[in-house]
Length: 247
Length: 243
Image (cartoon, rainbow over the protein chains, first blue to last red):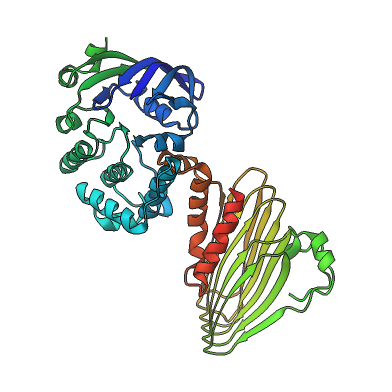
């Protein structure tokens, strides 16, 4: 589903990714772990097409199409979802309005019929219930006044409504208490653990991986993947730290 | 407000005006005069969509309530000038948006005089400017010596869609009483790049994302207007032309 080959990227002319390669197939859940400054968030932004993140070499192909050639909204319509480490507050725009516009823009781009207000609300209600989020929060302006945990939960509600093929989740576990972590973990499993979907989890800690079992774990250090393995690698990292494993 | 001689840019109230357009329209007709009697109620929506200089003198009697909602969007030069006088306990609300692109020059110029005690005035103005357009708000609040317990507020924000557009904003206070509350806030900025990216990352094309954010920026000014839906729709249509 996603093939990344020898990816090099800079932010403000500073090289961050230095030859990263990774292949994710449908039905797989991958976790990328690594120390601060390794390039984890840069990877997610490069794949999500954030302005200012310059690809200098290498390629990324999503379902056979050149991902790096697409605008951010085209990547979304193609089925890519980026869960933000720091979800953005948008005063004056309600969650419901935002998500309905987003979903229908994607559907139009794919040549599908837009959902009516009623159809959309039904989907939104289901997903909010799945993530144990109060429907009232969906009517409030996007992320405004939300706690850190509520913002992350809102990201997962959005993912549920948009129903992407590939989700890249950048530290979705940070800022969550234990109960919220379980809810979010269950949400990821129920929305994304399907033979036609895939997930790339970016995280610092083992704890999310207790709820969302990865098929593959990779260690990112200094802009490259230095080690890959199964779920046992995450536990090794937790026990011994990055310094030893990545060395 | 009645200007006897053709103004020039040396006149403070016409400093940013399109003097050529003013000259062409000269002499201006007498300002429209509206008197709201004591205890009365008045509301009006003004849509300036063809290029015009409109002057309105509004006098609110004791305890009268008036609200004006203004959408200033049309023509090469559009000026809306209000002179409001408030008697005891009167209440005045202005909610205004001006949205301009190309080479448009749009202005809202207000003088709100609190002539007697206990009156309230609230002005909210939002400008969205693209191209090489200019948007100006000059707002003077004058509080007479006797007008204690005056409560006035000016909330002025402008959004520039590119670096060649211009926003001027000048709240001005002239206070002769000593027990008053006169709040004023003013900000000029541009659309938040991270918020735009966030919207796009969810599948909303760049133009739609900008429109959504601008709509939210402008929306609040028409709250409570009788014609709210129509004003929102016209504003949205104009925003669509700019992004």
